Length: 349
Image (cartoon, rainbow, N blue to C red; front, side, top):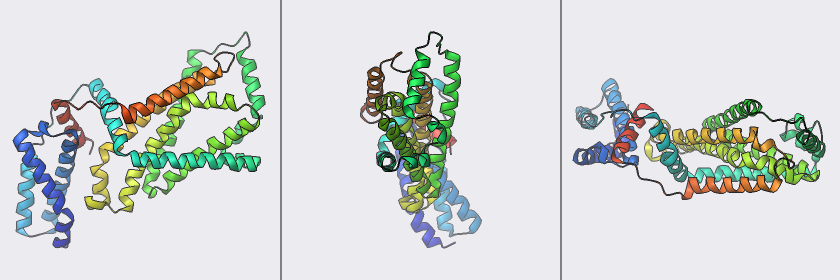
């Protein structure tokens, strides 16, 4: 091991841990902000790993003494507080941590949305030029009937005197939908490990499928039905996939930059692991809600619920999502909450 190179890569992290340890010594760990507490625990783990490396592979006694002293000082502040209540922690994540992570990763979110939108436009115009290419993006089961026939059959069934959409049927279909959507989101996230190429491909293909399907409905003059069908759940489902993609792009960015200022890919991912965790938790909640809406409300046609009502609902829901993620004031965590955040960072590592 080249000690000089090792010190050059890690020195800034050790200095930052020293500064946070000094601050914690003056204020206690609860006096650190949420971000500082998470950074403190991440740097502590990295310094402990560095100490173990120097002990096993050899190094100067001065470096060994320095790391032992740094880790020992930091360890004094690594006290896991009493576990918070489940619902309090759950509320904290949804009320503060998830939107905070989304705002911090707004660049990755914007890129994800742009790629999906590009795929939607491409899918629409490619299908408009060559209708048969719709089968490239959309499963054949969607075209066993043409869109107009499909819509007419659904309207006929829902206007029948015998039509009765039960809660059990809704629940069963919803479980299938959000299970499938979570699988897609997890795959989109995991493909971030392919330097983000797989993630971007999934986003483009998802958008192309939406664009191709929308074009076929529009060409068959049932475009309003399509918007009222996809809109209510799509305004949650599609952004949720973008959120999962943003989490995957954090990993991709670390791979492309070789860890950047963090000194390594794994170190970079470790430093941002809480943001990845919060994004995925938020994504899962969005997909569950989208599945519930898709399994029931989205399936009802104009005779039951007017199209303009469903479209208005989708617009309000999307505006609410944007306000929640990017404009809602974020309540600063209380002192006790900050220490809980730090312990969570340690435990999830």
